[in-house]
Length: 376
Image (cartoon, rainbow, N blue to C red; front, top):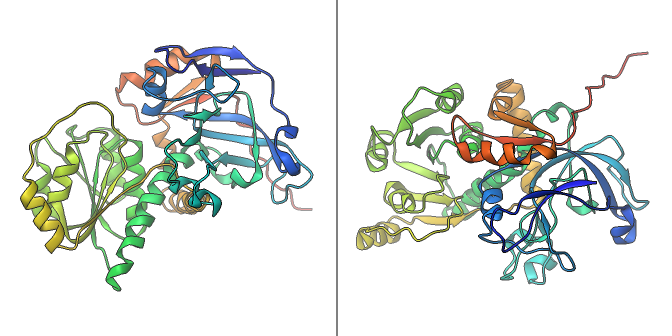
């Protein structure tokens, strides 16, 4: 079969390769699920892998198949698999079990291992291929009605995890009734965060650099949220005008903004950090004021990254709510489909262009037509 792979440690090595099609026998205990890949989303992680900023090949291989935002259709299942059948639409989770206590209790996303096992990112092959095989424990069934937007489920799961953690942290307050939220950044993660927070009933203000109007600001306003350009209203001014913010979800990919978020957060508030940043950015910040306000204001801060199965399932629930309440909203995030694995250069160039790009994805295979039951 064909797949897209990088040679870890070598910059700009992404290429199309031929590898053996995986088989159900690779998963012990008859728990294997063979999936035909339909779509795979790409993001900055894929750019950084191609730039050789991180990532290792699985043991025994000198290449890493990339792609961690997969969506596909079950081709075959092992004899011990229940709840999944050929024809089902599915998404696989990303992180795999390591050796820590959290891995042993089914929470690999919270592992304390220094080395993470992540499909398409580190030590495990990803989904930018014609097929993959995985254990049924890591396969999440997607309703057929979400087939057109199922490729968004992996980034949606990261959002679900971050917001769930915010509520979990605030159980310490016995009664916590957040009213206002801010989302920093209007990319894919920021848009999905605004959606989930609106579904929770919060007033949402999204702050991003680009002045409106454009597609992202229109999508935000369609949710009943507010879009604000930080070129007009800086973060701290937005907090005074539209806050205080009980939740701030940071998704800009620009680390220094986190310190402004700490100052913009209201008392008893939670800051969720979703950006994974590299580089050597430096910032001068009023550390005494930030520290004092965090301590006296009972503020908290958490990070969110690869999610667990429960967060994927929560994402399916909220995506279904979104499709019912705002039909077509999620589909508008899928701005740049690129057809075929052989178009990988166009895939990466489009991702890097940044011009009116929300979600770039590879159409590995065409979506099968919707099938409807005919009444007898």
